[in-house]
Amino acid sequence: MKIRKFKLDDAKELNVIISDCLLNVNSKDYSKKVISNMLSHYSISKIITSSKEKNIYVLEDLNKIIGTICISENQIYSLYVSPFSFKKGLGSKLVFFAEEEIKKNFSSVIIYSSLTAINFYSKLGYKKIKNHNSDFFGSSIKMEKLF
Ligand SMILES: CC(C)(COP(=O)(O)OP(=O)(O)OC[C@H]1O[C@@H](n2cnc3c(N)ncnc32)[C@H](O)[C@@H]1OP(=O)(O)O)[C@@H](O)C(=O)NCCC(=O)NCCS
Image (cartoon, rainbow, N blue to C red):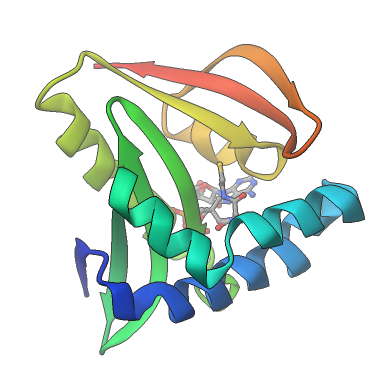
């Protein structure tokens, strides 16, 4: 199992994992409209565009992608693990990787946590700063961890 940089050929696999999470997991916490907005935000073409601006990483096991995380400056974005592989420590592994990268240049990490992942980030030492609301992405919680 390894974490490596995103390649353009990965976009389709990432779209499948992210869509699976949105439709089957995040949909318990968000309206149909927000889920539909998120699905369009993570289309294959938008993942490719985003990879030119942000550092996207994938977690690969036996040539199959099972998770992803994105870093820009001291912020973590777009953490998704394949639902088949939840609760096996993979999400934590991706966050720890991102923290090590961010630590090289910053003294804290910021995350806008989905409502679905608040307890996950709390377990990893993130503290709630404030609620955030967006018409397009719905509610999230700004959380921070100081190194
Ligand atoms: C959030 C997510 C990445 C966690 O991935 P994961 O691989 O299951 O996480 P881990 O196995 O590393 O879990 C670490 C700890 O958090 C707990 N945990 C994981 N997800 C949780 C959740 N949704 N609610 C409460 N606790 C959670 C685990 O039980 C584990 O606890 P333990 O150490 O006491 O056993 C995954 O559930 C996911 O992709 N969710 C949908 C997408 C999403 O909302 N991403 C966040 C965007 S900001």
